[in-house]
Amino acid sequence: MEKIRIDKYLWAIRIYKSRTMATEACREGKVKLNGVVVKSSALTVIGDTIEVHKDSFRFKYKVVQLIEKRVSAILAKPCYEDLTPEEELNKYKMWFVGKGGPERRERGAGRPTKKERREIEGYKEGDDEED
Image 1: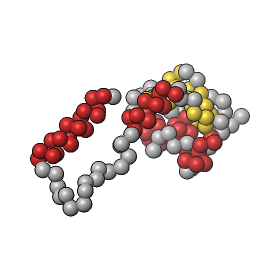
Image 2: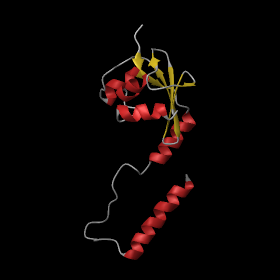
Image 3: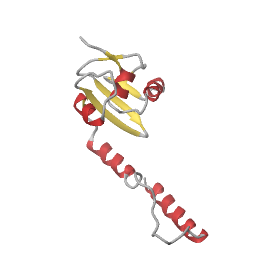
Image 4: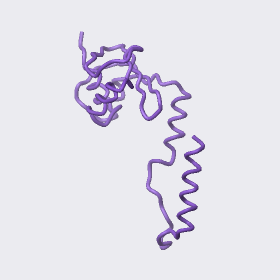
């Protein structure tokens, strides 16, 4: 039966940006394999359930296929099944809204005045308090 280190697998399927980050998450107890907190050297096999605590969200995945090399997101998708509960996904989507792109100002408007900057900062802080 094929086995692979859990930190290497989480990096390969693009859950973490680097293998070091995956290893640190395991060391900090943020990764569970079949309900048990594991070290980064733990071996995973097809059918295992992986729970990841990342950015105050809890994601859950089922191992469908083992890969050792990091691949594109399109090729990584068939290697795992996302079992994350719907309410957790909704919470993640609500948090992620508006965080992707840079802020824009109308062309020719120039830099914001001190008053405008304070309004912008107040608006941003108000969004964070709702979460």
